[in-house]
Length: 400
Image 1 (cartoon, one colour):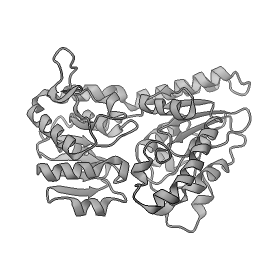
Image 2 (spheres, helix red, strand yellow):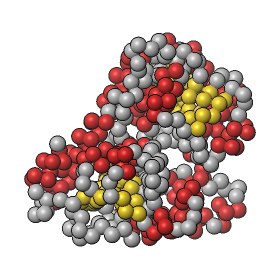
Image 3 (tube, rainbow, N blue to C red):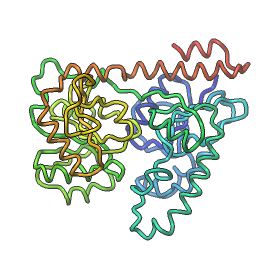
Image 4 (cartoon, rainbow, N blue to C red):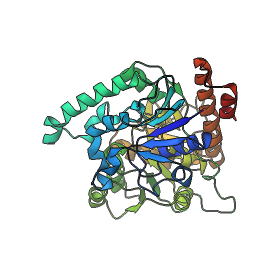
């Protein structure tokens, strides 16, 4: 059985690439198709396979400007030649699900999200006060949404990374999706039993790309008011603007190695998660390190955070008879005021959080579970098609 993996672009190791890495382990002989590839930007497990790129990768443009090629991306992904493959497994947050599988092949798409900028988060990417957002962007997004819905009809089976994303798939594409949460490397993100440094440094931590939908500006403003130390791990288009607004208590580190990130998790007081995230691997990495989370009560955080506060009145503790071992605090509004109030609540009730319980909460999301569930999902999809070219041996290999 010939397998093709399709991923939007290879420019860094984020949540989507961590899923792709597992797909590469499941199908070690698969070819990988993508719009563009920055060599050395992803893990060796991804880099060492055959990678086929689109015409966008050959344009005479700086690699950091690839997002300006968005109008070209639907045609580029449709131009990828997948002839001769029996299974197409796409990993999609933009256009990868629009790859055209050959006749008779199965196309299973693992969707991190329908493209955010075309649907419910477009105002965060294209602020309405800009003239381009008023005149140029609306017709472009209308065409993208039309293509997005049309190309979804070519996918045989959808798998979503959260119930939140499955609801988006149902809303925009009119399709059902199985839910398989993405992997958390709980073996790597594990506290050092010989170290006494667990939140001892007293700083709060934000981890993520510095782009509009991540909400880092809310965290900067809230911690400017609170005067508490905040470290921001990540980089992106908003970095210089955020640094200009930040007080002396806010420090920007840029991207860190995995080892340095693990150390920051171990030493932080709590992770701050102010974004409307499709799922959110970062909060579970922090939990795996025994650290609590202060998260916006939207999106994937509602599926992974057991709140210490009452959802009906977030400034009060959760009712004792309804509370699981808490893993974080939720704040209801995407504002600096709401986040600051949540930080104050956390500091008053910090004793509720048990590092061992936090780690136990993260363990069911581990990498081995993701690999097993994806393999089983593919095997079920292949079995349901009854194709003569897909043997029981193939399915057994996938399950293993």
